Image (tube, rainbow, N blue to C red; front, top):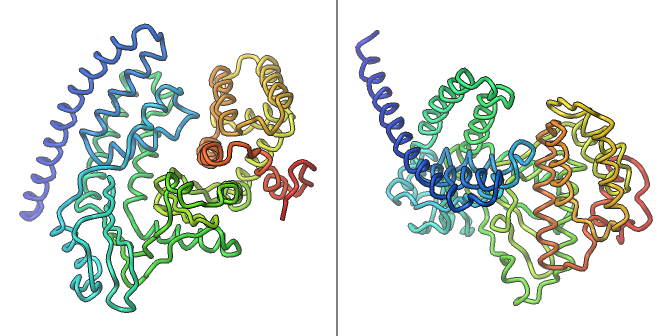
Length: 441
């Protein structure tokens, strides 16, 4: 070992030791939370134990910081792998964390862009308008052109911390698989690696910039769906500069006399095109990442986390939901089974009968009374009971639909949102849309 390498390895070893100590301390607190919540939920049976476990995990994530918060958030999207009580509790994790100091913001911007901050920006607000686990956002004005912009700045040292956490978590997961072989059945190490990959992908703001450009291209023909324009000269892997979005939040729409029907229709069209036509989906959709114009235009941002599926998976999504919406339970059952990542179904006939009966009950209720996202969630419960693991892209579809339907139910509950999605399912499959779901223009 060369002389310069020794201090570097020693520093790395010390960082590992410190981080492990933090993990142990956080786990101790989480265990205490689990004991308390398990006692509170003791009358709820298995769901109570799961809820207590998830609440303890939320506390652990919050104590250990960005990597674990983000992993918890991604885990909360995996309804195909995790039972509903766990998903519901993990969904409480939010990207609200204390901001880092402006001196570090300045240092990051200047190092990353290679210029003094005052040369790039005529004004740069020291206090962030939003702070999240990966980055924080500042309002600013560009010196060249005078545009008002939002500047997203990555947290300092977060990349190193995420990689350190990744190494520790993978060692722990592999040890767990050796000690408890049943964990191999759910591929614990593989799941941890996938979660950490998704976290690290989000840290590179050049990836978010690429996603932004692709979304803009996909919706170039739709003036009512908007993604913020970037300012490439002020962008890097650590800094993303984009137009400042002025739109209304959801809770402000009614007071401003917004066209709620049009907003809901635009939202359903946006999500349906992402899922069924483009195969490129905003995977972090929630009300905080949306802004609205009173006339109906929707702006989407925070594009670091996306779901991408190939043509085969995209068409499978469309066939599956089209079969569900048109009451073809046998096709629903077969598509889930044939595309399962893992399956150990003891009785396919019983599984198919239950799925057909379920879909038939939904058909009799009428499509206008069906919430697609909710019913997909119920179908996932059937799959879990018959030991069929749905493809991960189905969870992403469910999340995106849930966002659009949630918006619709809050703003325009009289609209039949499943009807709004059917034309895009039909377009993806190259078949005529059912008469009750024809486009209105």
